Image (cartoon, rainbow, N blue to C red; front, top):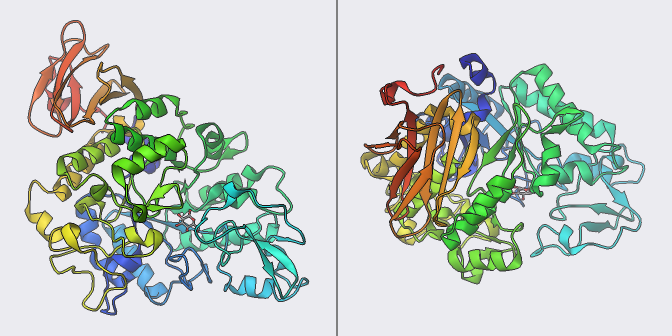
Length: 553
Ligand code: BGC
């Protein structure tokens, strides 16, 4: 593992921080977050230790789907600033060593995008084939309906031109047709434009929909992804695609790349995430252990992106009906907490009842699971949701900077949560002063994660613990080993771990003071507090632990 190489594939142990410019920080006092406000907070983000910012859509939009409905791919939503403000932000982020990626939402446009306005004006219009039309669509399969609260079909009849258009999501989001080479070229131009302004890549929205729902069907839909990736690599080596691909593992592996070449650099581990929640609900690591064992190894230079919460609902769509009900009962029993029949519109700390020990354990788990951690703004201070907001907007609340909110001088764009997760209880300023705060815990986890490249790079092995509530795994790379254990239940546990090859080694705790010894037979006895977690670096008895980290780093 050579240093130069680790920098080339920077994403493999990045810490990705997702934020919405609109709700992060208002710099001009109009109640809406903007690029100026975000730029003022770059030092906070750099101090937190995250290495890559993922910006949710910041383009002009009628905002019927929080910006995932775009009317111009080459500009900045005037409410959030100007292209000039964007460039100043990028310059500051780069100066502080932060990379930036942005949402690439090209499965569809807004129905107010000039392309669609023109496309629906007549069947002969120049942009007609940029969208997917049908005289008589196939009957809907209920499983295709992504937003069952609002839609009953993925086809909408267009009175003016007398045909149906496809919309995989809301009816105001007509699907672009990547079966059309002009559309593929245009998407490539969009990537090129933002990369020229400094982006290191994109979080690709709704990848399977993008390549599958087209007309005519592409002979090999994955070829388009491979072409995009090749284009990006030609323009800027080291640029990435982070894909939203929520499909079973066996289908997902092809999105990383196949015979056609590299495609998506990192895919979110939706299955691991859902099983992590099931494990937490049951205080039983088995579902997560099974997912980790079943999960395919991504090809070289590709990586899993790990997360527990994101900007959408906590989707539980890959669990069985009974399993989903178990998670609902444990973490979102009230109907108003649930959404689309498949998920929860809550943030993590409220789901865990505000129990700081448990919250800290959950994030320790996130950072230590093999892959690249992705966090959603406000997770680092334990922000809650606002169920008064509609649908998924419940989790997209304004960032809580100080006791009085600190997001804006004016009335903020979205209501601030009240109650025990309100800014006077949960905010950045207080947590900076409190050494036992969640914010400080995140800083420690991020620091340790970056110092333990084995976690991201290494070969991982799930260990037998003899206790269902305890998940233990080890990650090995270049002769260095980190052993990690998490106790998912609320009683203390003692586990014995068999650590082959580490006989007589010392295990140094990386989160608190302390060491343990592995016996001559290769067994370590590990006490764990209720909801406890331990990260342990192994060092041979004759080498002091501080010198035992991965040698080349
Ligand atoms: C995004 C959602 C969005 C949808 C349509 C997704 O999967 O994460 O927030 O509503 O795509 O763009």
